Image (cartoon, rainbow, N blue to C red; front, side, top):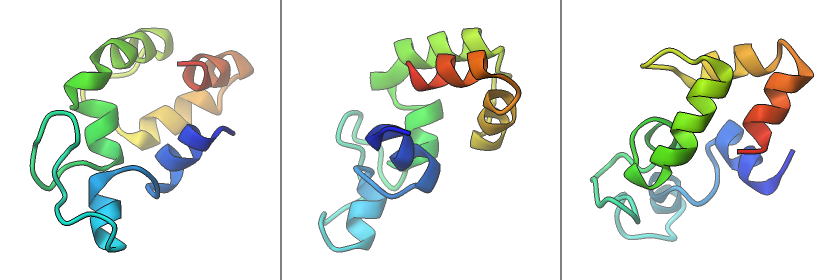
Length: 90
């Protein structure tokens, strides 16, 4: 587990929604795209344009459905070491 993977799996980290919740940021807007009240794990994994390239790579490597969830990712990466490495390396 890396620092960034820990943030993805726990939801605690450099997400504006979480930083606002703990009083470290005045709003919940995404640092990158400015969408309000959505900068959380799901926004990062599925929507934020900053991660489009990495998202496409992971979706293709893991054969994720279009509207995948974090649960879908976990289900797939638990099936094999290769899947885990594909996700954790991206």
